Image (cartoon, rainbow, N blue to C red; front, side, top):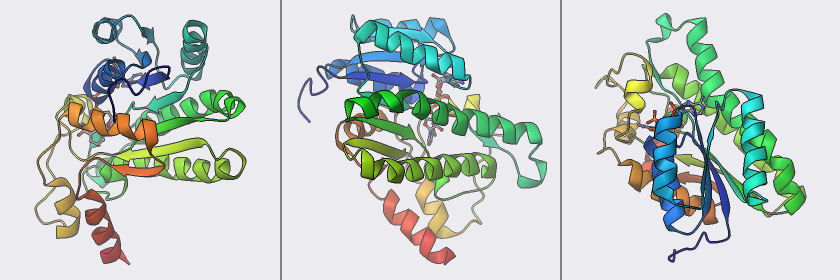
Length: 259
Ligand SMILES: NC(=O)c1ccc[n+]([C@@H]2O[C@H](COP(=O)([O-])OP(=O)(O)OC[C@H]3O[C@@H](n4cnc5c(N)ncnc54)[C@H](OP(=O)(O)O)[C@@H]3O)[C@@H](O)[C@H]2O)c1
């Protein structure tokens, strides 16, 4: 895509104080977008917004709180007059064997990985429907397709988010064909995600099925590499997008082995 291909576009990015979200925000700004950045920590969020330049607005918000998500949308509208693209990037991991998963773990996964996305979609969609165009981009994980232990609760929450997104895509297709719902499936990324996760940062066992392990055993991507795919997807994609070239092949091999 060409230089400044997001000019005139207003893009909201959640989870933008670090990791993939910060890299997405910075690439969008370089490509000409006006960006609205949300996260809970004001300091790092402000630093990212400053790096994005004058067309950036930082909004301290917790995406697991409906009122905060509504305020994020309201502040975006007040500053830029509209939203074209909304990127639900917030997410949190967990590494815990199935028999040790607690109610609090499940609640945290559903709150952080499902409700945060649901709230974003519910808040922005009436605005996008009224405009007849736009995109919602939800950042999932390959583990939403291939649920490797000990990350079952994380994988389940991402799979739930995928179901929500796919059903919503179908719901909108007839009435609003120019409104895109995109789901991005990264593999491993070199961010603070592991440190921010609940439970143990244990690697998947080498005894897992080869088709499943193949999907997660390649070299991790950088936040910038993933951000580039997310940005291109936000501009053009329909449906599902993998950030690694071989990922869809691995997912198909895994699914065929299960059937
Ligand atoms: N890293 C990986 O290996 C990997 C692999 C596949 C998929 N993913 C997915 O990629 C996305 C980005 O992950 P990442 O690696 O960039 O993670 P990260 O480094 O842990 O960054 C998470 C970002 O989300 C923000 N955040 C967390 N909870 C929030 C909340 N409730 N409200 C608002 N902001 C919140 C954090 O900032 P504050 O603390 O300031 O709020 C931070 O900016 C996630 O959806 C993740 O599941 C990651």
